[in-house]
Image 1 (cartoon, helix red, strand yellow):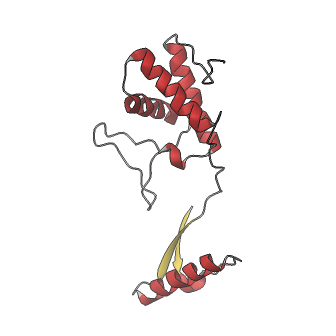
Image 2: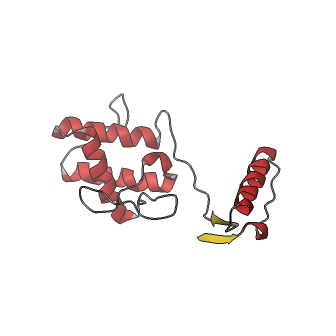
Image 3: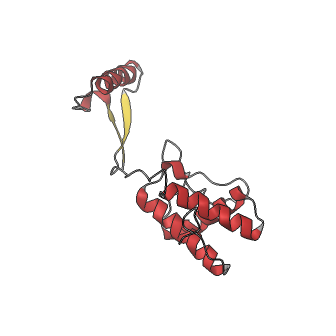
Amino acid sequence: MKLTLPAMDIQITTRDKTKYLEWIQLQNKALASKAGYLSIDITLPKRPRTTGERSQNRAINGYIQQICEYTGNEFNDVKMYCKNRAMKRGYPWMMTSEGEVIYSLQTGEPMPESETKISVEQASMLIEEIVQLASELNFRLKEHEDGTE
Protein backbone atom coordinates (compact mmCIF):
# COMPACT_ATOMS: atom_id res chain seq x y z
CA MET A 1 0.00 0.00 0.00
CA LYS A 2 1.30 3.45 -0.90
CA LEU A 3 0.26 6.57 1.02
CA THR A 4 0.99 10.23 0.35
CA LEU A 5 0.54 12.37 3.45
CA PRO A 6 1.56 15.77 4.77
CA ALA A 7 5.04 15.39 6.29
CA MET A 8 3.89 16.96 9.57
CA ASP A 9 1.18 14.28 9.99
CA ILE A 10 3.69 11.43 9.94
CA GLN A 11 5.34 10.31 13.17
CA ILE A 12 7.84 7.51 13.60
CA THR A 13 9.18 5.75 16.66
CA THR A 14 12.56 4.04 16.52
CA ARG A 15 15.47 3.34 18.81
CA ASP A 16 17.86 3.54 15.88
CA LYS A 17 19.34 7.03 16.18
CA THR A 18 20.74 6.98 12.64
CA LYS A 19 17.35 6.12 11.15
CA TYR A 20 15.67 8.78 13.27
CA LEU A 21 18.12 11.46 12.06
CA GLU A 22 17.54 10.34 8.46
CA TRP A 23 13.81 10.70 9.08
CA ILE A 24 14.21 14.24 10.45
CA GLN A 25 16.28 15.24 7.40
CA LEU A 26 13.70 13.77 5.04
CA GLN A 27 10.82 15.43 6.87
CA ASN A 28 12.63 18.81 6.82
CA LYS A 29 13.33 18.42 3.10
CA ALA A 30 9.63 17.74 2.46
CA LEU A 31 8.58 20.72 4.58
CA ALA A 32 11.01 22.99 2.72
CA SER A 33 9.40 22.08 -0.58
CA LYS A 34 6.18 23.78 -1.63
CA ALA A 35 4.14 20.59 -1.34
CA GLY A 36 5.30 19.37 2.08
CA TYR A 37 4.18 15.80 1.39
CA LEU A 38 5.90 12.42 1.69
CA SER A 39 4.99 9.10 0.09
CA ILE A 40 5.20 5.96 2.21
CA ASP A 41 5.15 2.33 1.06
CA ILE A 42 3.71 -0.05 3.64
CA THR A 43 4.38 -3.74 3.03
CA LEU A 44 4.92 -6.87 5.05
CA PRO A 45 8.61 -7.62 5.63
CA LYS A 46 10.10 -10.29 3.39
CA ARG A 47 12.30 -13.08 4.60
CA PRO A 48 15.51 -12.74 2.60
CA ARG A 49 16.48 -15.69 0.45
CA THR A 50 19.22 -17.97 1.67
CA THR A 51 22.79 -17.85 0.40
CA GLY A 52 25.83 -20.09 0.77
CA GLU A 53 26.28 -23.85 0.61
CA ARG A 54 23.05 -25.77 -0.19
CA SER A 55 21.07 -22.53 -0.32
CA GLN A 56 18.26 -21.33 -2.56
CA ASN A 57 20.69 -19.00 -4.29
CA ARG A 58 23.06 -21.86 -5.04
CA ALA A 59 20.17 -24.07 -6.21
CA ILE A 60 18.81 -21.41 -8.60
CA ASN A 61 22.15 -20.71 -10.24
CA GLY A 62 23.40 -24.30 -10.10
CA TYR A 63 20.24 -25.73 -11.65
CA ILE A 64 20.25 -23.10 -14.39
CA GLN A 65 23.92 -23.85 -15.13
CA GLN A 66 23.13 -27.56 -15.45
CA ILE A 67 20.27 -26.82 -17.86
CA CYS A 68 22.61 -24.58 -19.89
CA GLU A 69 25.20 -27.34 -20.14
CA TYR A 70 22.49 -29.80 -21.23
CA THR A 71 20.80 -27.52 -23.79
CA GLY A 72 23.67 -25.31 -24.97
CA ASN A 73 21.71 -22.15 -24.13
CA GLU A 74 23.24 -19.07 -22.49
CA PHE A 75 22.94 -18.73 -18.70
CA ASN A 76 21.17 -15.34 -18.72
CA ASP A 77 18.70 -16.52 -21.36
CA VAL A 78 17.74 -19.61 -19.37
CA LYS A 79 17.48 -17.64 -16.14
CA MET A 80 15.22 -14.99 -17.70
CA TYR A 81 13.11 -17.70 -19.35
CA CYS A 82 12.61 -19.42 -15.99
CA LYS A 83 11.80 -16.15 -14.22
CA ASN A 84 9.22 -15.30 -16.90
CA ARG A 85 7.63 -18.72 -16.47
CA ALA A 86 7.68 -18.36 -12.68
CA MET A 87 5.58 -15.19 -12.86
CA LYS A 88 2.51 -17.39 -13.41
CA ARG A 89 3.28 -18.90 -9.99
CA GLY A 90 3.39 -15.45 -8.39
CA TYR A 91 7.03 -14.53 -8.92
CA PRO A 92 7.13 -10.71 -8.63
CA TRP A 93 7.40 -8.17 -11.40
CA MET A 94 10.16 -5.59 -11.46
CA MET A 95 8.79 -2.25 -10.23
CA THR A 96 9.98 1.35 -10.19
CA SER A 97 10.40 3.12 -6.86
CA GLU A 98 6.98 4.68 -7.56
CA GLY A 99 5.37 1.23 -7.76
CA GLU A 100 4.99 1.11 -11.55
CA VAL A 101 5.64 -2.14 -13.43
CA ILE A 102 8.75 -2.15 -15.63
CA TYR A 103 8.12 -3.61 -19.08
CA SER A 104 10.63 -5.27 -21.39
CA LEU A 105 11.58 -3.12 -24.37
CA GLN A 106 12.04 -6.32 -26.38
CA THR A 107 8.75 -8.11 -25.63
CA GLY A 108 6.52 -5.49 -24.01
CA GLU A 109 5.85 -7.94 -21.15
CA PRO A 110 6.44 -7.18 -17.46
CA MET A 111 10.05 -7.79 -16.40
CA PRO A 112 10.60 -10.33 -13.60
CA GLU A 113 12.27 -9.08 -10.42
CA SER A 114 15.97 -9.66 -9.77
CA GLU A 115 16.52 -12.59 -7.44
CA THR A 116 18.58 -10.29 -5.20
CA LYS A 117 15.29 -8.65 -4.15
CA ILE A 118 13.06 -11.68 -3.67
CA SER A 119 11.85 -13.48 -0.56
CA VAL A 120 12.35 -17.11 0.44
CA GLU A 121 8.87 -17.94 -0.86
CA GLN A 122 9.48 -16.22 -4.20
CA ALA A 123 12.81 -18.02 -4.58
CA SER A 124 10.92 -21.28 -4.06
CA MET A 125 8.59 -20.35 -6.93
CA LEU A 126 11.59 -19.84 -9.19
CA ILE A 127 13.22 -23.11 -8.12
CA GLU A 128 9.94 -24.99 -8.74
CA GLU A 129 9.78 -23.54 -12.25
CA ILE A 130 13.43 -24.44 -12.96
CA VAL A 131 12.76 -28.02 -11.80
CA GLN A 132 9.64 -28.12 -13.99
CA LEU A 133 11.65 -27.01 -17.02
CA ALA A 134 14.27 -29.69 -16.38
CA SER A 135 11.49 -32.28 -16.15
CA GLU A 136 10.01 -31.10 -19.45
CA LEU A 137 13.47 -31.48 -21.01
CA ASN A 138 13.75 -35.02 -19.54
CA PHE A 139 16.84 -33.84 -17.68
CA ARG A 140 17.60 -34.93 -14.13
CA LEU A 141 19.11 -32.15 -12.03
CA LYS A 142 21.87 -32.84 -9.52
CA GLU A 143 21.19 -31.08 -6.24
CA HIS A 144 24.70 -30.95 -4.84
CA GLU A 145 28.18 -30.45 -6.24
CA ASP A 146 29.14 -33.99 -5.31
CA GLY A 147 26.44 -35.21 -7.74
CA THR A 148 24.01 -36.45 -5.10
CA GLU A 149 20.33 -35.71 -5.38
